[in-house]
Image 1 (cartoon, rainbow, N blue to C red):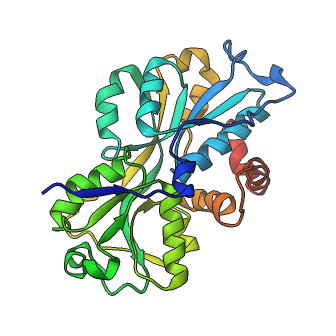
Image 2 (image 1 turned 60 degrees about the vertical axis):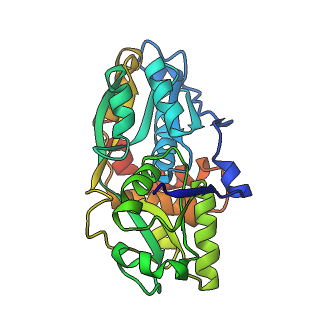
Length: 300
């Protein structure tokens, strides 16, 4: 049986639905610090809609590169257009490719036209989460208790690897065909999660670690005894094939970039939990000041 799907229409869902070029491109008054021959144009960083670890890492590198004399443009886009853009040279880099599982299909399609700079975090994990006081602890218990969750699993962007794996593997694997997998956006899913936990109601959502939601809301992961969500993955930086030539210095820095989950949680928490707004630059600047020694080591 095909998984039933519907779209969650809300203002929050529309926020992440389409590509959006950020208006605040980073610029530095001292462009002489840059040693790259192609630094007369901005570094084009693509950012997946709704994937907060990638948003956090992208804003971090926007400020690091600006301090080093580079102009940077961040562009929000859905997953598929990002890989097509990297392969076609429209973007230089994306910092949020999950391998070997979540984005494997895209790498199979575009891998010969892009470059994998390696994993900067190796502790990523896809999850299905519920409210902390939900009466179940495992995905194997969800089917028989589906009515307690309104027979719905609240998902994110339909083009994401998480939704593909949930719909193609998790739903049939745990007999959840009677539930509706809602296609929405990450902001919409988080809005639903907040509303449900604030109201003391049961909810099932597609989620992943690392994510600031685990600090912000009383939630828990459902056990995955069949291992259908996969093992821990790496968060990789993927670059256009021309990136090493166009920006050799930045290419070297990003190839050596590593960030553990504790630091990532700290940055995400500052940007998305403690701060209520979308002008992240001052928040990231303050976080950099608090972690200056580590940040300086990324380009030393």
